[in-house]
Length: 67
Picture 1 (tube, rainbow, N blue to C red):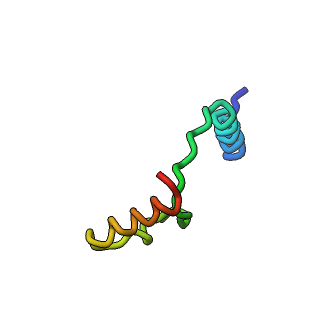
Picture 2: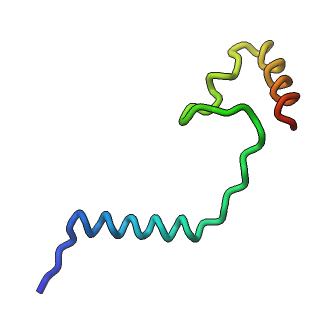
């Protein structure tokens, strides 16, 4: 008597492994304070393109959000 794995079996096994992983994983350290970012892109669009303006923006963020 043979048994074949179906897509449902694989999906349930994968979900179980993922759940165990999430439950046993150590909590990550929180991110440092900073401006809120967009999903996936983060703060890539907030950083000035020229080097002369970057230090001013980073200094402003430091004053606003702390070091």
